[in-house]
Amino acid sequence: MKKSRIGSSVIIMILVNLLLPDASLWEPRAQVVQIMCGNQLPHNSTISIQNFMQTMKNLNAQVQTSGFATAVGGSGLNTDHGLVQCYGDLSLPECVLCLAQARTVTPRFYPFNGAKVYLDGCFLRNENYNFFSRVYWTK
Ligand SMILES: *[C@@H]1O[C@H](CO)[C@@H](O)[C@H](O)[C@H]1NC(C)=O
Image (cartoon, rainbow, N blue to C red; front, top):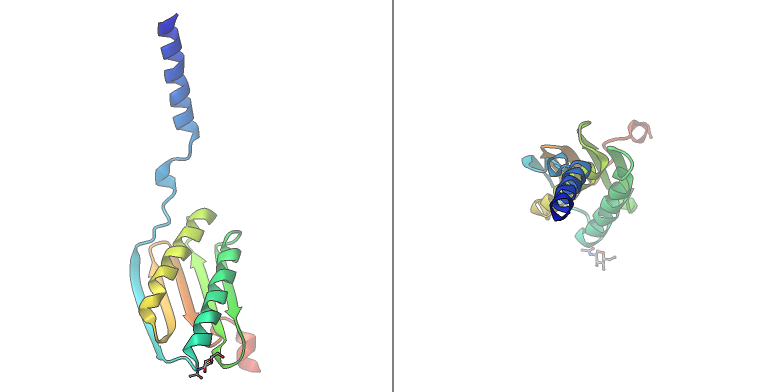
């Protein structure tokens, strides 16, 4: 009686292990490959940082449902523009984690505007000008 109970709990444990997501599937591939810093100082760094935070919040909201996003924070001279793209083999939760990791690199760029962060699994770019909308250039 006791022996069969142990046997069935072992089987349950094996089943649970098979059903749980494999930890190796959750790899945002967040190793920094390269970072490139801009060389322009923001017009007003206080406002610029606030706008940057706004852009990142917006990007973060978008990558919950898409591996690619662009966002704009603030307006006027300190408008912040951000773009994130994850490699296609990353799941959306991995993409969110990868962006979070890329964001932690950006303080290294301070006080300069402009950041390109290449991680193993995703790319983040941030500038004080619009680099992703062609419409912008025709205006
Ligand atoms: C930057 O903006 C803040 C908030 O509007 C303002 O208080 C500050 O004086 C500005 N700094 C410069 C250097 O213009």
